[in-house]
Length: 267
Image (tube, rainbow, N blue to C red; front, side, top):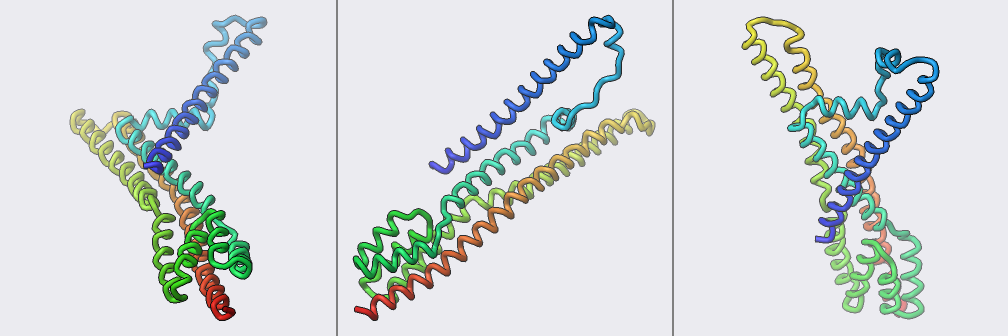
């Protein structure tokens, strides 16, 4: 439940940032227009200024214009896929960065604690360290009094649990990656059908009759592909991060078993 609320919080932050950016851009545009009118009013009248050709829109304004032209039905759903996908991706990145542990330092601390204070001292070192590797070490040390084999089984079993925690909600990102372009293609197909319906109703193939409709239909595909590309970049980063942590977990597990065997032989 906490993760669900954190995802919603991140999504709200993304939406709020977008709204604030839009508002600030609009305010800056209004300020620039006022300054332009004020500076030119001393030399020319307002009627002479109005017929001038409109200025070219910036990237943000052009993107907003194209998004509105695409229609609220499919473009809204595509935008929702982007917001939810980014929220989950940011939450996973934060979680994975917090789960990263210096395994060499942890292994050295556990080994020194075993030599000086025994199992309980080593478990205390693991309790003071965050991350899945420290949790695996703790579970292995908790079974170390029984036997090395029992500790090894505990490490393997709990390693699978920690791997599941690392991969949690990642499948939703892949779903949004596949869903966004599909929705875009669907919007394009529906737009083409509407365009051909207009041709059939008019009884004439006039380019001006269908050009606008076809352009709007293709915009949904463009935005769907943009969303998929953005989420794919985050997805690949998250998968690479998970693989790196899993490799550290496996190496650390082998190191822990070696430490326990060496500690048992010394006793």
